[in-house]
Image (tube, rainbow, N blue to C red; front, top):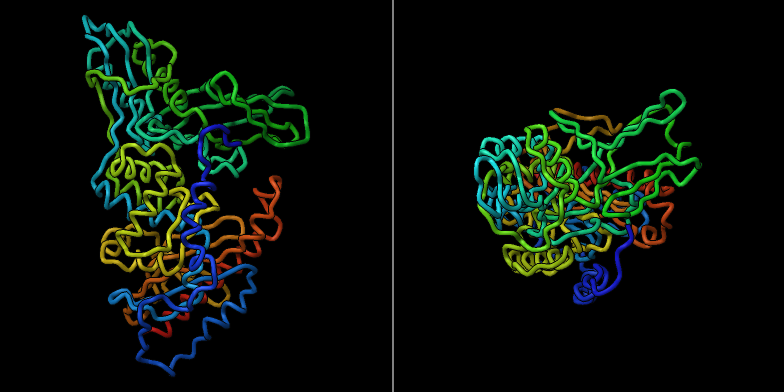
Length: 499
């Protein structure tokens, strides 16, 4: 999606100031080690592991590689390369966002979606407006709205005389997480204070009687209501596969019939999240005998009596799921929620990311974080390996973040999985075009605890990609594969060397 012009400040412009401050250190050739003293391994001279430099050379990666490993107990750096070169973190950024959200919001924080009445209820009739009010829940789904509709019925409402309003202003509205992504990728939807099904719509197509039957629905475990806020038209063309148009407050899609095969389905992003949630709730309310008018956007936060509410799970569980599935919209919602708590005037995703960058710098005494979002999807974010290590090595992170990171499968020399490997790793991965990162914790065969960060990126090659190359750029899979092999080889070396 193209970013609108006007008075909005782009992420590149805002990031420019942050990167300017880092230009002398973050973007230039940095010292090999962090500023922490190097610990001398007790088994120096006994290890047969290949040197880290030889592993980097063997990987044959274009671009830059920055890595660092430290003792998890003392925080002392053991070895590193280009530790203060600022590189795109990709989804490794979600680990930083998790630390930020857990500290600012608290592990037990829950998001609440409520129904408000702006008038009295007499004999089941609401003499006023009904408001669906979101607080930024990234996990709200159609089943949750179904529960909310049931609770509205239980509250005694059978009729609504006024309007049906939807409000998502608890968070800044984000038209799409990353403007450089193709329109049709479901991992870069719009974000607001009222979201549904990770702001995705299910598109399914079947060939029947020589014609295409297409549906767009908001399916979850219990329900699959068809929606009109997003529609699809099959076009007689070879390409492009998808086109998108924002028309009449609706997401209007077309798809090339030559790309459909015999049938199939996929998720598409939603760019009208409040209206999407409103339409789906209206369908579910109607199933309970409550007929609502078509949903309208509320520009200002309405005031009224709470009729019913639906709570998310605790934040720590939301983040554990986010880290496992690397869900971008979850990262943006929790990150902006934390920033709004610190600064209620936060007006954009870029401002929120800058607030997080500043908070991390102050909290962990590092100057190496300058991000443009909370998910890492934006390729303009920059993080130093040394800064990442400092955050992870802090006792706060080891207590809060380490238990919810995903276990990483170790592999043998033939790259086959080693489920019983004596080396245990929990970490966050990150992948963009010609960007690969991994950061987390290692428990070695002898019980030694290490903390590490590895960032690999070929920024010039990434920035040279044309629009048509960004979804499947040539050479990306091979480059990414070599980066992942390097990450595993470095972990193997550190497990062997620092026992």
